[in-house]
Image 1 (tube, rainbow, N blue to C red):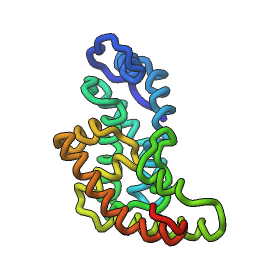
Image 2 (cartoon, rainbow, N blue to C red; image 1 turned 120 degrees about the vertical axis):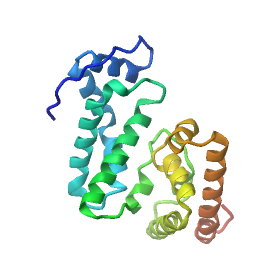
Image 3 (cartoon, rainbow, N blue to C red; image 1 turned 60 degrees about the vertical axis):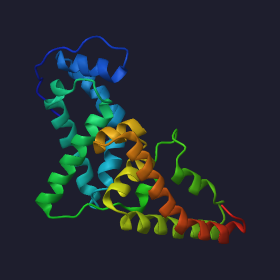
Image 4 (cartoon, rainbow, N blue to C red; image 1 turned 135 degrees about the horizontal axis):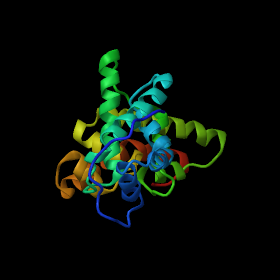
Length: 213
């Protein structure tokens, strides 16, 4: 990826590793930005992969995302996490590609299994409730299909909040910032979305395990 250096005012010193790399990038250190690319490339590609069914486009959109981020890096002021800022760029870039191709964004079933490992979330607990037998694997596939169907049927605000939390692993604070609403509203939306998913998934888990989930 070839990127021309950008100009801008060097941000004040900070202990935040991402902000330090941003500061070095703004100062003209392209290698610092490459470190940010390495750190977030897979995460950005997973995000884009949930919006674009054509896997051949994912890498191109991800590359365009980082090019746009590099060109706008001087606009990053550190009032949000770097990934939150990058997330917006990735989503907008993917939407632009989809509009140009006249595709509709979708959430694939594989997206249900792309939560960051360190984040013990609602979907993780659903997965961990199944064992590794042929029957349970079939049941897990059925559960994933149900979860995806419920997600698609949710109102847009509930679906977005739950996806940001469970699939992207964002904090409540980051979600509130992205959705431009109070954190209490975020918690309420996620709770309601989880309740909707649970209502459909619990009977399947009860049937599999023979006990209430």
